[in-house]
Amino acid sequence: MGFFSKIKKLWKSEKEDSVLEEVFPKEAFPPEKITETEDWQTGLKHSLAMAEPRLSIWLDHLLKGVEAKGDKLWPRLYFFFDALEVPREEADEFISDFSRWLDEMGYTHLDEFRSELQYRLALALDLEDEEDERSRLFIKLSQGLSKTKEQLSKRIDNLLVTSDKYDQAFWDELEEILIMADVGHKASSELIDKLRSKVSGQIIDDPEKFKELLGKELASFFPKAPRRIKPEPPEVVLVIGVNGVGKTTTIAKLAHRERMKGRKVMIAAGDTFRAAAIEQLEIWAHRVGAGFYAKKHGADPASVAYEALDRAINEGYDVLYIDTAGRLHTKIDLMQELKKIKKVMHKKRSDMPHRTILVLDATTGQNALSQTELFAREINVNEIILTKLDGTAKGGVMIAIAIQYQIPISYIGLGEKMEDLRPFEAENFARALLG
Image (cartoon, rainbow, N blue to C red; front, side, top):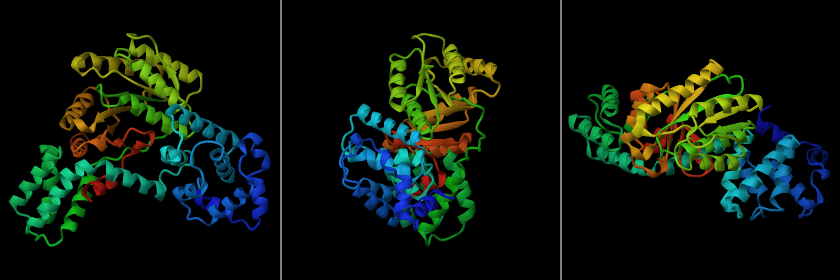
């Protein structure tokens, strides 16, 4: 039975009183956790049962009257988990993690943490693909792409309004618009060639139809990540990229996602040369509740990876993320270092590392393209994460990367919060970019 069907059936049972007692026994709350009268439980149960089955709507009811963290919040979360028949130990872990996170971040008021709570619940309850979360992501994506959209979409709109046919002047100006948005010469040319073959000789009588066609062509250039069967634990993920692209926080966000899905995660500090790299990563590992492995500054990164893998195997971790250095000014040494890390892990198990993720900074535009070329040529890159998309007018570089290198973009960074690393969907990207 689907999640939504299950909860609606549970809450709309003909035996409402007995169901309430079954899924929310009084002993669920130690006396110190109860500050409201028990009447709120019955009222909340009825409100949720009558509400539209969407996580954000349920949270509106669940958090009604809650203004800050504290005694009102925790009983309501326990009520919600019990009603969903979530095992008590999982509910305890979720609430304990969230309480610790609020303390770490210094968040007190509801408006500071509501969005993070919804994101955690969506991951923990496997609701990220539901319509509610997809809508939330599209809004965030549209906001994040506002600078790139300003550079691209409005100029295309103006071109369509001022042109009456798809002539050479039209295509020349469209190519200039694409290049200005950091799509690049090669990618712009290939995109225009595909469009020309479909609209050649036609009159521009409906600009929206052209934009719809452009959006479909844009989306078609992005390769989809292949479906992967989960390997025997631990799944090992090597994270690479130059300094300054946001590898540390990206690893933290990835670890956070996996933790919220119930997986045991370790982070290994393979960047042993950059000042404060180990300390920064350890702070983030603690914040997201991940295990951490490091050696002293200047240690051999390959030995860090090998020993971290040993510990991850022996201590039953599900996922191991390995940070790496990004000293582009010594790129020959860097590539040899990355290859050595891969080699020693491959000796441990022939399928390791299972994934190699390249992190790129969208604000660098064409530099991100040259970094992709460098790493893809030397290292087998399985997927790309593009960060800082919310702060740039150069988001068109994503199109160039997709067309030229055919490496799947798995996630995009749309801000600094944990919830701001989201799965990439080509159709939504094109729709948000073109309006």
